[in-house]
Amino acid sequence: MSTAPAAIPGPLARWVVGARPRTLAAATVPVVVGTAVGWWLRSGAHAGAQLVAGPASVIWWRAVAALVVALALQVGTNYANDYSDGVRGADQRRVGPLRLVASGAAAPGSVRLAAIVCFLVAGVAGVALAAATTWWLVPLGIACVAAGWLYTGGPRPYGYLGLGEVFVFLFFGLVATAGSAYVQSQTFGLWWASVPVGFLATALLEANNLRDVSGDAAAGKRTLAVRVGARRARWLYVGSLAGVAAGIVGVAVVRPWALLALGALALGVRPARAVLGGAEGRDLLAVLGRTGQLQLAVGVLLALGILL
Image 1 (tube, rainbow, N blue to C red):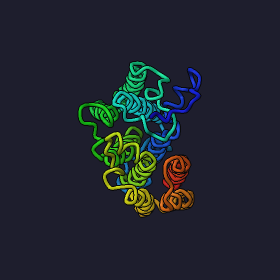
Image 2 (tube, rainbow, N blue to C red):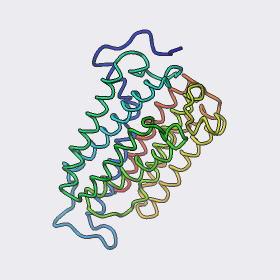
Image 3 (cartoon, rainbow, N blue to C red):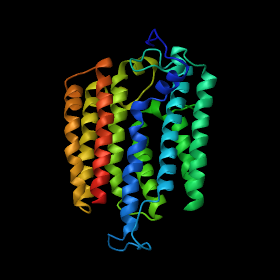
Image 4 (cartoon, rainbow, N blue to C red):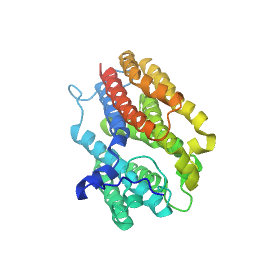
């Protein structure tokens, strides 16, 4: 039986809801942190840096283009996930917000087209960045699009194999953060700033998968939360937050003011308690929202700490 809300939003609002706004922090934070790292690399403030002519500053058009790439990939992945899960019938017993295909709010073909358009937008911005830096960004971008589509699409979606957290850590942590730094500085350095960013994205996904664990299990969607069971999945969420803390400390070895970001982890206490306290289903919607807030707060303070 479908758990879609009785009242479907209006024509525009349904597409906004379908884009899953609560997940967009996962796209924004790596660009913010990576841009801060890129500025530091260009500033010559570290050993071996190549000094730029005059005071270093952010190359703003590249930062904006990187943000467009990240957001378009995230929204495109969300629509692709909606489409693939919808046509498979995997969203029929979910407890989260509206899904376009499963609820009948949009035709499957329209949702698939929306995903493709988002990926094309990301591609255009990505090609502009590649032309200004390195053409190696093109195959990397293709890999990002493939990862977004194959999360729940294709004959063997890796999200159904329990590999979602690995790919989220890789693409929304390492690739997005280091890539955003590279387009600013055209060099790699302080790459481990991507580690806390990756764990933040993993925590967000784990909160989502823990919320849907019963429905996913019934639909044959073998996420990591389904594979290890709800009890262990709760510790995966808390472990991701611990990984964020450890990653921040690692960055602070080089940029001590990065420790500012540890203060934001206070925002993780309440959702962690809810998760460990056995919250289920709709009670985890608040956890997802608070995890997104935590993600933004840590990202902003981590970026600030790198800049100071």
